[in-house]
Length: 514
Image (cartoon, rainbow, N blue to C red; front, side, top):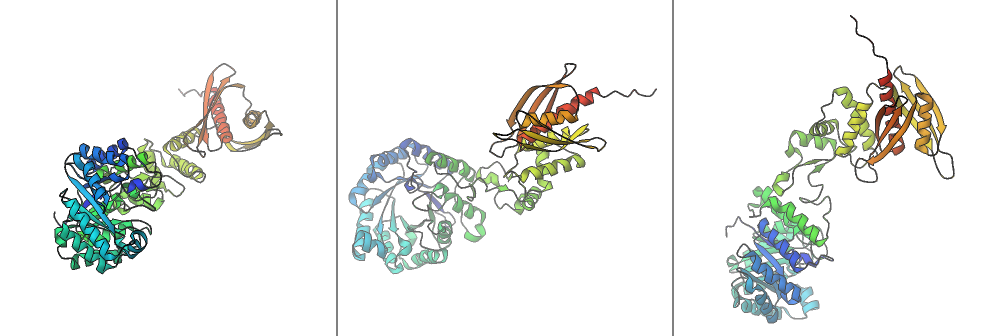
C-alpha cells in the first residue's frame, strides 16, 4: 500500500449500531453495506457475531453480498470461541478479516479484566496466533490505548505484530486524548516497535471531548494509514470519528497530510441520509459536511461573497459531496444582492422602483419569520404588482375580536390624490368588520361571492394568501388577492385589490384626440 493512501475502515454497522436506539435488522444492514461499497470504503466491520444470532447472520449475508469489493471484518474478543464464531460468520466473505483484541490501559487491566500486564499480553498473542491460523488478515485492537502507558503499549503491539497481526488498531476508546498527545502516541509506536512496518497502523477515536476527528487526523499525520470511523459520527456515547469529516479533511488539505482516500465523495450525502433514515438518528443542522446548513448562507455579507465567487466562504464545492449546490437562505440578515439574485432565479427582473418596494416588504416579512421561502417571494412580488395604479391604497387597519366581545375594525385608505380616509365598523367577525369599514369609505355596490385562505409556505409563521371574488352591481366578477403574515391584514388587502379592479373598470375612457 502506498504511504500516501489512507484506508477507510467503516464501523457504522458495528460500533455505530451501538448508539442508543440505532439497532438495525439484517436487511437494513445489507442496504447500508451496499451503499458503503458505492461510497468506496476499504473495510466494512459488519458486526460482532458472537453477540447475537442477528449479528452473525448480518456478517454472513454482507460477506456474500459484497464479493471482493471490500474487506469484510468481524469483531471478537481475545477468546478462541469468539474467534471461531467470527470465522464461521465470515465463511461467505471473499476478503475476510478478524478483528480481535484486549484492553491495555491500567483501568481496563485492573478494574475490568482483573489481570496483570503479562497475562493480557499473553492473551493478545494467543488470540492473534489462533485467528491467523484461520484467516490471512487479522487486526488487533489495543482497547483504551489512549490511556495506556506507552511503553507497555509498545510491548503489546510488538508482540502481536510478531504473532502475525496485519493491522494494529490504536483506539482512544474513551475519547480522552487530544491531538498532540495522540499523534505522539502513534509516532512513538512507529519509532519504537520493531517490525511495525509489516502492519498497517489504524486509529479508532471516540468523540467524548469533541476531538475524534482531530485525533484521527493527528494519527494520520504521525503515520497511521487506516482510520476507523462511522457515517455521521454515530456510535456509543458521544460517537466516533465521522467518516465524512476525515475524508474531506484529507481531500481538502493534501498539503498538510500528504494523504488521501479512495472514497467517492459524491456519495457522502446520500450515504449520510440513508444511515440517518434507517437508524432514526437525525443529523444536526450545523453538522459539518452533511448537515442541512453545511452549505447554507444567511448572512448578507456571506451571501454577497458566495454569489460573486463561491470559494470566498466555501472551501468545499457542494457537488463534491453530492449536494446540489450552495443554499442562499433568505432571512432578515440577507442583503439586496441575495434577494435580487433569488428573484432573478425565480424569473423576476424588477425595475429599481418596484424592487425597492419588494425589498421593503421582504424586510418587514423577514423580521417576523425565521426564513423567507420562494413562495413568499412570489407572493410579495404579486403584492407589489397589485399596489401599482391603485385607486385606494390600504394604509393601515386596526381590529379587535374575542368571545365575549364585538368584532370591530378601523381602516385607513389613501386615495390617488393623497387624501387619507378613515372609518370604522363592527361585524360578525374581524374580517366582516374590516370589509364593512372599507365599504363605508369605498361606496361601490358589490357582493362577496368567494373567500379563500391558503398558507403560502410551511410552518406556523407562514405567509397567508387570501383570494376573494366580488360581484359588481352589473354582474361582473372581480378577483382580489392579498398576502400577509396576518390573515386579517391579507383579507383587507385582497378586498381592497378587488375593489380597485372594479373601480378601474368603471372609470370612463378618455377618447383619443383626432
